[in-house]
Amino acid sequence: MAGVVLVIMAAMLAALTVGAWPAIRKFGPAFLATSTWDPVAGQFGALPFVYGTLVSSAVALALAVPLGLGVAIFLAELAPGWLRRPVGLLVELLAAIPSVVYGLWGIFVLAPWVRTTLSPPLKATLGFLPLFEGPPLGIGMLTAGLILAIMVVPFIVAVSTEVMRAVPTSQREAALSLGATLWETTRTAVIPYARSGIAGAIFLSLARALGETMAVTMVIGNIPQIRASLFAPGYTIAAVIANEFGEAGGITLAALVFAGLVLFLVTLLVNLVARLLVARMAAGPGLIRE
Image 1 (cartoon, rainbow, N blue to C red):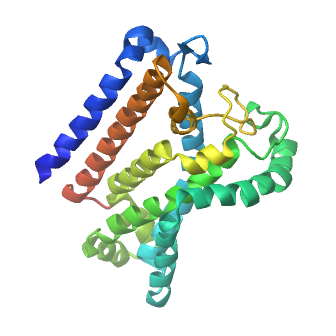
Image 2: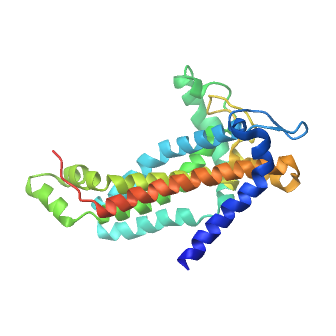
Image 3: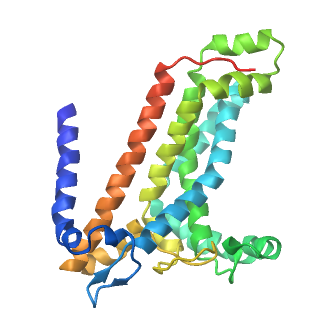
């Protein structure tokens, strides 16, 4: 049965490679370095989609990691028993909400809030930076990053909480016996011991953000451009596949499959790194540092 999983993965990789082969043979590595996406002329470059995927995921991690790690520390080390279970359940419920529901909420609630409430003060105070130039549209990279952050927080919380709970009690007792407070024990004994597992949780959430489709498609704007401003619309690999696959054919279909192959390999690599980090945390000893 374990071998069946490997066969399925190999079959997926083979199918994507075969489907993308005409585009691989025609465009080669330049597919990832050019910006033209013109089905009429038969010219395709995935750079705007790669850029949009990476930027929206980076914004999501920048927002989700501090929040998720804070919630995980609270649940694993600080929360009283009567509060730990309901808070943990509420966080887990975030992962059960369908992606399209997040997208609808993003269109009707989050995007207007970003346009009228969040973007104006950001532009007023940080408008001299390229990241916050241009008119606040509500739909764009910032909104996509925000909605992705909400979607990946449960993954960071779940994995980080478990690896912190796996820290041996002797670590905490050693710090407490030296006069450390509860927070100092968490900061100096628990977090350093669990750092590899926490890094694994971050990488797992990154893989989730890279592959998200519906919610991002509904709020990012779907314009294949490279703009430094987070207020500007963008496009992602998953979004362009979802939007154009139904009507694609010939070299256009091969280009979309090529983009899917790139996303598959990147996500696979990120998940592999995350698993290695979690395994390292589970197997390696930790030390209390001064």
